[in-house]
Length: 100
Length: 131
Image: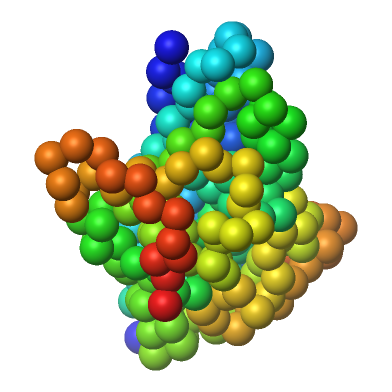
């Protein structure tokens, strides 16, 4: 099953609830304010890291790009893939750092 | 104009306003709308303090790029606040820590406060408005 979360994990408990309910092998897609949870040093990142053992974690690229911290991809290994959906008709997967 | 006249039309009265910015910048309109209210308040020559706490910290991040999500990037406005005599910007240390951020990640110079210092600052205000 695909779970989509769009609220910040440091403001609401939606991500935590989602991770609790998601069964092994499910996909969790972080969009909008939910992508903050996946960023380095965020208090919620550890929860995602722990959940990543059983789940596939995706984040929407443009929402992550709006979050401007340092290059996130290499150290944020708990994210299975970052999705960019405007470049092709199907979702493309990019793991390169998109930040200048 | 006598003191009584000044009291009646409200001019000359300066109150201490604190604006608490608690939400991430792009998921809701709170951050942008809050910024508008801050500018209006400053235009009335009031004593304005801006506090960034919880996800509000993300409003001040350096290098925000909103092209991909097609919303206005208003983060540069924070750098122009000085021109509106808004110079009191405070950030909650615990909120920075919880997000793995430091003062260096922020687009403007701020004063970082502990919880106790923040509580004292809040207690000094005449008006506290939360966005």
